[in-house]
Image 1 (cartoon, protein in one colour):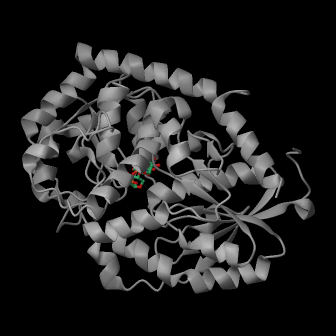
Image 2 (cartoon, rainbow, N blue to C red):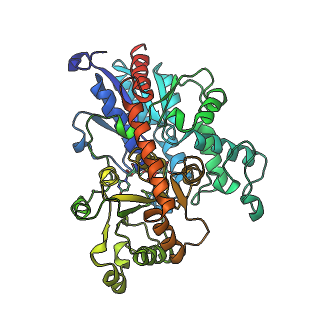
Image 3 (spheres, protein in one colour):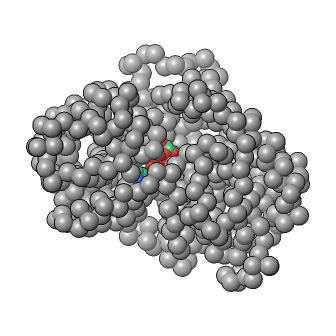
Length: 452
Ligand code: UDX
């Protein structure tokens, strides 16, 4: 396909991201790739967590009227927010499509914006789903659905939480993607609707087939029957240009701090865009980091500490102890940070984007998952890919934190994990090259859309 189609000859795609950071980023990477391959892009997005359109002048932005009440947003109940978005945004998407239906080749929507499928099909427009978590997460969500249908949730028997789920090796019951903020029946409703494909033409997946080969084989028959799958991960590497799609402003001063640190000496700490910590957990993290004697770059997102404004927690005693050895920011340019030679480890909540970003940059992980798919991702990182170690246990303890950091950053076990992580980096670079799985699947995706 010609990469430099005249603007007038471009065909339009309507993209609908889910309004959370971990979903906005992959959709905008895909949008950028498709724009470079000759398509015009319209992005329909909610007022909630609205995307800064000034940073993406090549795209047209239109609003979905989400009508989300403030008390719902402050509840942090993601399942209820998603159910409300899917109910409330239908009418605006219909208005948007009615205006551009002649130009639109297809709608590409996030899996969590499942209402788009019926709206598109009502206009006779094809739709494709973008799945932004791993295939293993998808399969384990289906297990949650089944447990729910059998009336077995919530799982109350603590003993069984440690058992492996049948046919889901290496996941234990406690690694299943339960939400810490949402009611299980609401979550089950969202899952059911997300995976109930009826008219979608294809599934685009931010994963790499060899990362989870048996899961990839399974999913083809389980939910994607007859529908082509395009595993185009690592999605953050596919766009030739990179405008930030961060909802918070990135503090790049941390890069100057990183320039002054020794190679592989810094542990980067970030728990993504949703995780919320208690003040006690924060104190344990702070003192664990301080006592580890390793340099650290720590993202403390505003609003991420229950009942506190974030950075205000920093104790004088802690500041004196760490001095210039620690750098704390509200939000970091994560991919640049992970690519920096000074960064030798990533303390992560194991969100899928962070996981794939870390693997593709060869950075081993200290895993402390919080909710949803993060627990399963952590298990794969530690037990399948063996590029990380888990900070398990319900309560975070400063001595465990200190031990974990030292193991990852300076001990033999961590050195081996770093070597394995570097192997992943090389393999991922291969799949991005001409003829590699990612570039092949992307080309097939473009051809598929062009065939409509
Ligand atoms: C959520 C879920 O928690 C995650 O498990 C799911 O897979 C996607 O939705 P989030 O918690 O935000 O996402 O984690 P993650 O998937 O890692 O996405 C965070 C994104 O924000 C990453 O792309 C990361 O690069 C970016 N980020 C994070 C920054 O740019 N700067 C930061 O300081 C922290």
